[in-house]
Length: 360
Image (cartoon, rainbow, N blue to C red; front, side, top):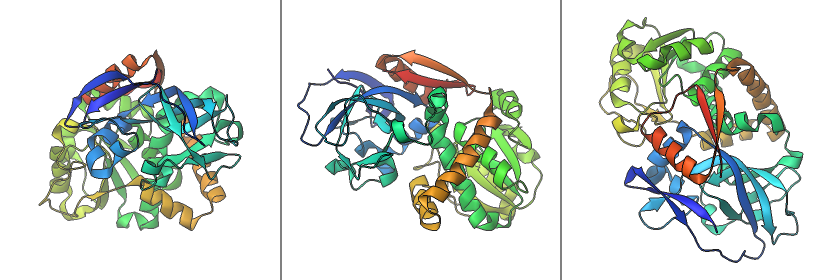
C-alpha cells in the first residue's frame, strides 16, 4: 500500500503520514518503489516557495496539503512500458513517499522524461530520470553524496557560471549567507576552482562558524552579527538564508559597493519576507531571485549536453575533494523518519555537518 508524507501548505510545521489506496498501473506507465532520498535545506526551500514557484504541482496531494519533492533513487517494480524493465534503477525527482508512477517518454540508454500530463507545464529539468545502468555520474559508493549534494552543487555551479558570464558584475568578492548550507558550499567550491580571483566570504550563525571555517572553502567567515566588520569593496551577495534582516544589513553596510544581490534559497523560513526573503526599499541593487532551472536551460543553449556535462563533472570531482569528510552521512529507515527529519529541518534543528538519507 503506497504511503506519503502530506505537509500543510499553510502550515509547514504540520506533516502527516498517510496511506493511500492501491491503484492499477496505467498503460505505458512504470511504477517506481522509492529506495532512498536525501533531506536537505533544498527541500525546505521547495516547501517554502511551493505556492509561488509551483513545487507543490509535481506530486499532487489533497486540497490544502502538499508532498515535498526529494532527489533520490528508485527501483522499477512494475512496468507497462516496452522500454523500461522491472528491476531497473533510476535517479531523479521523487516524492516524500514510498512509490511513484511515471510515464516514460523520450527514452534513451541514459534516461527518460516523465510525460505524465500534470508535469508537462513544469520545468523539464525536474522531469528527467537517469537510468543508472548507463549513467556516467552514477557511482554506487557515492550514492549518498549524490543525493545530498548533487542538486545543490549544480545550483552552486550555475550561480558561478552566471556570475562569470556577467564578469561578476565587476566585483572582487562574493558574500554568501547560510555559508554552512550545502548549496553555499557548492558555490564556494566551484568559485574556488573557476573564479579564483573572487574572494569568498561566508556568513553563518555563531554556532556554525567553526564548522564553516573548517571546510576550507571560504577566505573569511563571519557570524551574522558581524556584518559591520566586513571590509568594504565591490561585492556581490548570494543570499541562501532568506533572512530579511541579514539581507538588509548586507545592503546597508555595502551600499553602492554592492553590485548585485542574488536570492537563492530559504533556510531561515521563520524570518522570510516574500518568496525568498525579499526586502523592499534597500540601498543598492534590487534583490533578484535565481531560478536554477532557467539558468540550466541557458547553460545547455551555450554548450552541448556533453560539454556542459564534462564541465559539471570536473567541478563535481573538485567539490567532493573539497568537502572530504566535512559532512557525515546518516541513514534512517522509514517514512516516519523522513517526516521527523523534515520537521526538524523546518525548525532549523539539523547539524550542518550531517547529511541525512532516508530509506523508505
